[in-house]
Image (cartoon, rainbow, N blue to C red; front, side, top):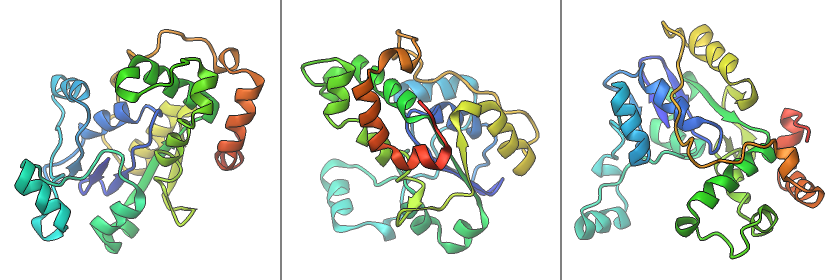
Length: 236
């Protein structure tokens, strides 16, 4: 997640939409007062090697601490910070109405069938960490309910009370053109944005999602992501 006071934008980071790569690329243009949240250690190494600004200004002021936050600080030495996949409601609360209403807000969405397959291979790679079901087939993965996480880190992030509240939902399928339109044409960044490759080691099977999902999988996901499919005119 990035809040740029320099270019007056808020980037909401959804999951499995190349958003880590986008966030790293956007951080190149951030000023010292801008807010950049922390990524995984491997992704921060990529950002560091590129020479781009890393996590900054993402710790909360002590005046915003709850009793639980103070307890974590006292017992574990952990300061409360803004997280990478922060939703619109929490961001709006943090920045206030003036900034929220005047800054350009955008995020990315992706074909849900393709996005689910991407999440599956990510979980398959990290199955010990993510507690994959004993049956590692994609059908078992879908039936287990894991794809619901994509809604929590997707449309639910850029909605408040079930209403989309960002200025633009960019489509992953048109990634380069969307970025040029937002970054160069709308926000006025001086150079074309260049995407690094982040989280690219999780998937070895590069088949199209149509070759991976069976009819039952397809219909299950169609029901889960019916709103996204209708809003963005996605087709299997």
